Image 1: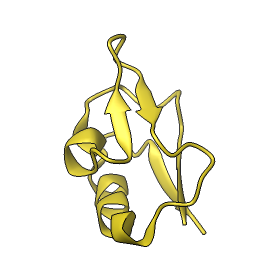
Image 2: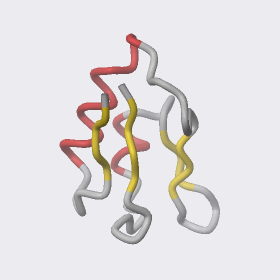
Image 3: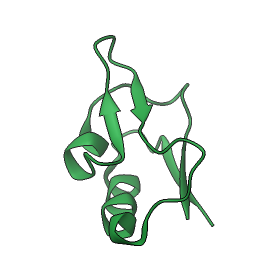
Length: 65
């Protein structure tokens, strides 16, 4: 399982970081940093990953298998 981000849609609200701080971080410029970019999400982080996708206010995140 992976999460992808549509960088053009992302507005840096930080909801994903609040829900899954082990997966996402908003940097000092307000840009989303995916901490596991191009890596599968560990099983113990699946639930936070799904919640971050579901709670993104601009639907910038998407799940991929």
